[in-house]
Image (cartoon, rainbow, N blue to C red; front, side, top):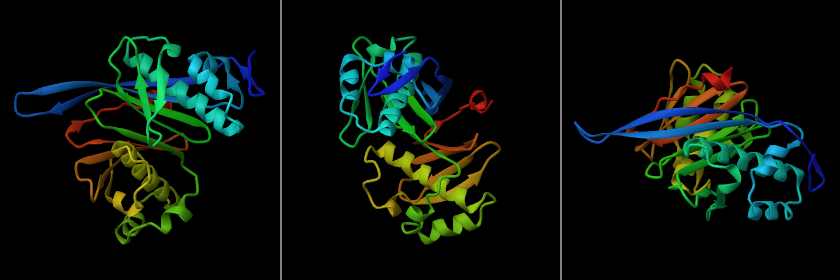
Length: 256
C-alpha cells in the first residue's frame, strides 16, 4: 500500500473505455475516418496504487505541492482517465510514458515521445472522471456533472431569455435542465480552448432536441458546433464537436 501526501492507496480502479469511429464528409467522394476513445473512471474514497503508478517523475513531483485532498484526488483520477484513453488510442502505450501538460487555460496537452500525440479533453465531478481522446486534426470537448448538482444559482444570472424558454419546454426536471445547459456550455468552452472566460451568454444554447438515448444540442453563436448530452447513472455528460462529423458513440458499456 502506498501513501501519497498522507492519503492511503488501495488497489482497484473501476474504469471503462468506449471506442468510436467517426466519419467526416469532405465532399462527394472523400470520406475520412477518425478514431475516438472515451474513458469513464469512477472514483472511490481511497487513492489507488494504479493511479500513482500511472504518473511520470514530473507528475509525481507535482503531487508534493498539492495541499488539498480533494484536489489531489481529482488530479490523480483525471490523469488516470486521460492516460487510459490515450493508451487505448495508441495501442497500449504504458501509462507512465504518457505526459499530460496544462495549457494556458488549463486544458490538457498530451505529449508522447514515440507516437503522434492526439488531442484530448478532460472533465471530472465529485465521483467520476471522464476523458476524450481524438485525432489531433479534430476539435472536441467534454464535460460531466452529477445530475443532482445545484447549478441554478450560477446559471440563472447568466441565462438568456431564449434559454429560459427552453427549460420550460422540456420534459426533464428544471434542476436537471440547468445541468444540461451547464455541461453543454462547458464542453463548448473546451472546444474553443478558452474555458469559461467569456460571458456565458456567448455560449447560448439555441436548441435542445430529445433523441432516443440522448439530447442533441445546437448553439446560437457557434453554428459550426453541436453537442450530444447523455444522462446515465445520475450523471449528465455533454460532448461538443464540429457539425461536419457523424458521431456514433455507444455508451451502453458505461451505463451497465
